[in-house]
Length: 300
Ligand SMILES: Cc1cc2nc3c(=O)[nH]c(=O)nc-3n(C[C@H](O)[C@H](O)[C@H](O)COP(=O)(O)O)c2cc1C
Figure (tube, rainbow, N blue to C red):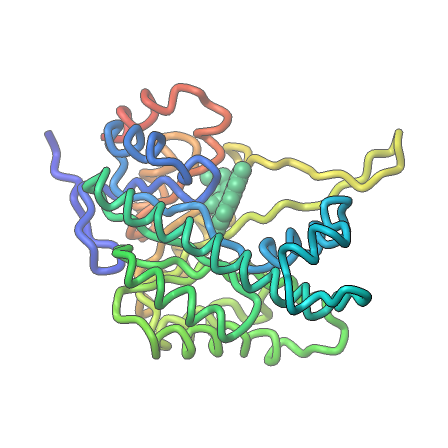
């Protein structure tokens, strides 16, 4: 048996194949299977601060949020005659945030008990405070590392490239003040000077860069004239973009690189490693190809 062990984010991995962040990595049962089938590490499903806020807002707008239930749930905040939406929203959001975060911390500590491969948590926050707060709590719950899932679409006409890029550095600076475990940054490719930014990011305290995130993109259904979701899963031809950037950046930047997007078979895994990736992350193939077992076996 060839020794495929490697280091990623300073963690010892038995091989560089990581199951990336998605719904598949949010249950202990799946995590056990992932370990059993030979993955080197796992990135848990992200906890999204925006999602928590959105759900709180939806709840407030829903029929569930009738006056009586509000008065019962938020005595002292909702008066008998008035409905303080903003106050109730803030209260509900902070309650929901704590609740969701605690569930996530539970997943991490359960995962650490259930599996022996490194468990990398993943967060996506929208406020400076929560980036550091979530990261600190996640470290306390025993995660081996954290992937900061920062995806910014530079679509604001008022913001320059420098302003957009500053957001990444601010987040890193904030997080590194509060945690000692390694953390990486998962980014998209919308940068005006990707090589230089990647270099600067790699010098800012992160242990790794994940290239690249692949967000859901909108589409238009021309029959219904509705906006719809497009191509939730990647195709096996989509790896070339990350392959190019892994090759361009490896050996030049000062942190590890995990290749992500479009890695669907063992030949692509090998290509990414030859290009200089320290590890690879796979997601879509596990949704599309139900023989996850055979895939991971081929990689081992
Ligand atoms: C159903 C689904 C859920 C995902 N959820 C997350 C997530 O919670 N956090 C994250 O960072 N990426 C998430 N992703 C993105 C994947 O981690 C990955 O970056 C992307 O799918 C590209 O890799 P692939 O080509 O192997 O699918 C998700 C992807 C899919 C398909």
